[in-house]
Length: 495
Image (cartoon, rainbow, N blue to C red; front, side):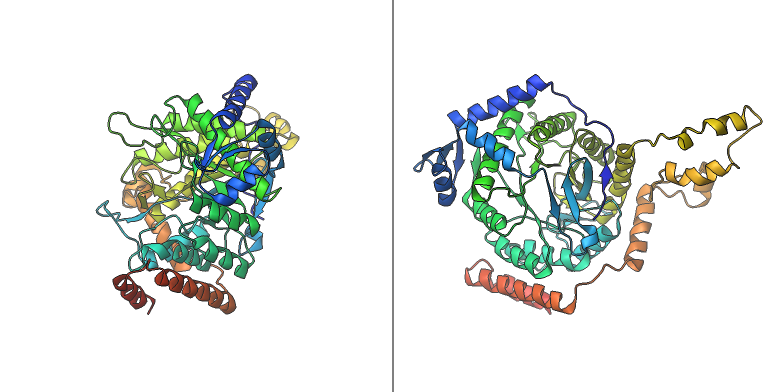
């Protein structure tokens, strides 16, 4: 099992216990009075059979407080995400913090700063880098390069998952789209793994039918689900952070009810990321204090419920390049989330509001993740580390610590060093070509791609994955979701 980072300090709390209770009671009242729109017949009947007030014509479900609180109690406080290499399993929950690959629709050209669809080889290279980076714990192959050259849109998620499984042994994220969960579950079963299954909630207070189709499939297969409750404050939710928190918590409660009625004890985490709308432009802004504050508050509520948390506070930036802005907007959000009790951090590699992705940014972000992790792990205070006898022995100047056995024993354990940052003295930096962190990260990517070899699938596993992909291709072709032109291009690419 991957250890991740252990948060040794008490989680940061922004809300008083009375304020947390006010949010909780407010969300209960919203679901009792207004309810949720649930566009799924099975889910509606399940709720009706357990005491909810259900309007089948409006597809509106009003949920009693007692049922909600009982279902929250049934949610496991931790669960295992199974990786292809079982030594890389994740135990999600408790005081452990894991980092996962970021998101980004398109490949970022580092020379022009323009984006384009990614290629098969670029997705493979990004997964090899993710497999090599020590602070990527969940190698999400699905949600980057979702525009793929030569692959019909309907097949991109499954092809991305297959690429992720082939080129990394780490645990994987997945989602849903027009029945692709059917084939993703088959892949998971063929490899003896599970998935972290992301499922959308639409604000305000709505879950669509295709989402619930996938949710029931995942729950029945024993795969942990991860509902998302990300709200744009001022449009999809109230402009106030407290009001949008109430709305988001109400949607968490709705998911807890559906999951636990479907299968008591079904594992679930919650992905969240409330952030403000820029009222000047109508766009969504990322990496602002508003998002970090909202993330910290949601983490505090989820700790009360003992439901694992996945935050997107640090997953993206507004920046279109790999610059100072992308660094501080991503790093500060991830730091606040980790300090406030988050378990999974969507982080390495993605930016510009999920538009762009590049493995060089993953490499730079990985240093940030390591920095945050080292801070979370705190300081070890023992007789040996206090070094009182050593201090007395060395005494004042001309005494020094450089040649002591204590320094030789402890410096590597005490000191954290980044892998891609420039740490040279200025004269050395000038003589070595004035390389900045971006140049050093590019060099590290080249080294990884030339030396790192992920643990491959067995021939039998690879055959099973390809057979499932072939079945999916035929399924979507028969439904008319792959055009003749797309199919011809697709088949040429498969060779």
